[in-house]
Picture: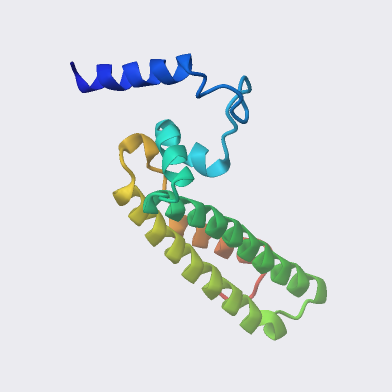
Length: 156
C-alpha cells in the first residue's frame, strides 16, 4: 500500500470516528492573515508551520520589509514637511541641515530596505513568491525633484 493511501485511509477513519467534528471554525471560510497572503500559493504550508511555531525566515523577513516600507513613506513625508516649512518661512538656510539629515535618513533606510528585499527574493521558495524591489536611485531623485520644484536654492 502506498504512503498516500495509508494517509488517506487514516484520515477517512478519523472522519468516521468523528475526530473532526465540532472543530473551531467548522463550516466557515478559512481566515487568512497578511503573512499568509505574503506566502502566496504556499499560504497553507505557512499556516501549518506557523501553527507549529516554525515560521519560515523568508516570510518573517517579508513582514519586516512591509514595516520598513511604511517607515520609508513616513520619512518621505517628514522630508516634504521640512520642504513645506522652508517654503512657508522662506528661510532655506536655517532648514538646510534638517533637510540634508532627512534626505540621508531616507537614503540609508531605502538602501537597507533594498538589501532586505534582495535577500528576501534570494530566500523565497520560488519566483511566484518573489517581490519587486524598490529602485533606490529613482526614489532619491523624486526627493531631489521635490526640492527643486519648491524653489530650494541649494542642490539636493
